[in-house]
Amino acid sequence: MSTENLLLNGYRAMCAGNPRQILMDTTYRVVCEGHGVLLVGVVGLSSKYHAVAEALVSNEDTAALDFALSKIKEGAESTVSKYRESRSYC
Image (cartoon, rainbow, N blue to C red; front, side):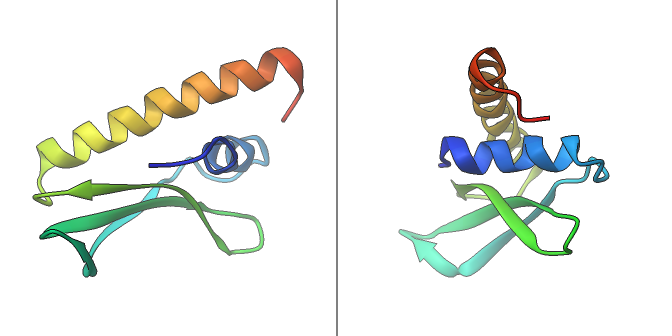
């Protein structure tokens, strides 16, 4: 789950020269029907965390993380390509 603006946060961070690092952690304090919430984001130049997306995962294993990250990547690439055509974000 994400929004276009959140997906663009990750792209903007990359354009600003931040290291290409993705921060992610699963919390079980916020549980939706027994599923953990995977939070994904980047840290900006001001050292503040910027959310990019969140996903519900049943297991915190490689398959679940790979699937969640691949879907986030697809959404980010789609959003960035749409905005690249109309505006410059870098």
